[in-house]
Image 1 (spheres, one colour):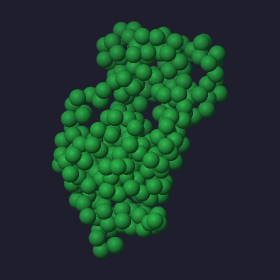
Image 2 (cartoon, one colour):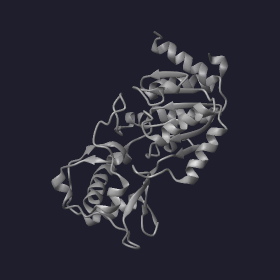
Image 3 (cartoon, helix red, strand yellow):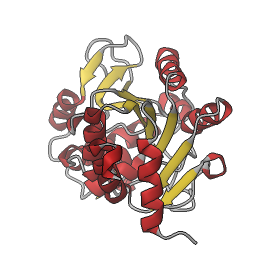
Length: 282
């Protein structure tokens, strides 16, 4: 059986051998930054699945629960800083062989680390959109409005994925959920909820970027969400070489030419330092 070190060396050679790599990243890139992930190493849910869009739109209790937990989790979420994986991708982009970075994450940590060629596949949590008039609002502004409407409401939250927080159900009942100041409509973070599709224009941009790539790297994703797995399938059907770096199994393991298991940040820091130095570094 190949050792981790030898697999790292194979990944270095694999990356150096391609000039237009399309990278797809997931929650495993942000766990070291203090943002928990949803799934375990077998790809199974660690907790109750995220809220479905239909329930969010139609059930007042679900809407209130979402925003109460999101309000409580926001300070910890915004305190997260880019980690080793984010810095590695930024360095790789600067080296010139990373053609596009598509992330399932909604935390914008790749951008904060300096990456520019980024597509937020599932949107961004720092912007809120009204489901009625489509007005867009910075999340920090909404956080201030919720604080004013819920003076004295101070639960003791535990961190959960994507700015969510675990808080006592009884405390949620007294939370005043936000509404659009312009039309009174429901407010939703500008992210793709379960039950929604990736916006068509964004989806087409991602597919076009993949069509111009010569390889696909998956980093820190179990690929259990179909919008991500579909990109791996498209790459496979197009004959692109696929490599995966992840802690635990993924839905795309059988389609990959190379799979390296372990901490994404540690592996990519080492590997991309070599890639940035060029073939002579091998």
